[in-house]
Length: 250
Image (cartoon, rainbow, N blue to C red; front, top):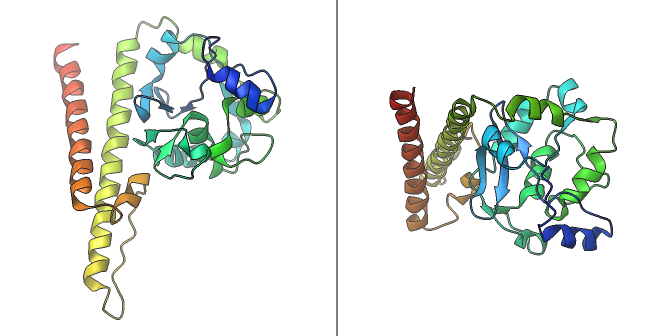
């Protein structure tokens, strides 16, 4: 959770919840090198822990003991990656939408599938604010603060370049897997359309499900082509950067 005294959303949170809000942003750790969040310009994506924490040093990190005991970390990561590459939007607060997320909404949706409570009161993820999450995790004994661990691991690390490269690999893997899920769903929809008049229509259940799978069959062919090209362009660019670092930045 990131703290910023200059962010106007602190005032809005304080008004909505009638209590002082201290945090303007929420993110969820994905791996040893990366986290996922929702930002206005970039949407939902994987980012480097090393670079972000060194640039935004006023933060707090909390860890769920229940998540560790019940071994649900993999479930959290899978649910978190489901929303990769969504656009950022606050419109869901008023108008339901499955195509957008904002930071605390993303965290709430990711934790929903694990059974770990992220707020004191059960709220629709669209109505969860950073202040709601902080009030719960900072006072509930099932959550422990591990901020110092992250400061010791990342502050002024001499391995930031290596950590950033590892994070880019994480992002490449998430994007690549998402594209595979999208393609599998497209194949499933095509197989169903071809066989839907038979006694037993062929239904293929994609192994990997992402929010983008829902787009298949709901949008015109132009949008699907655009979506696919955009993903492949991004993945090729990420691969080129990784190869460059590997070959020329040793």
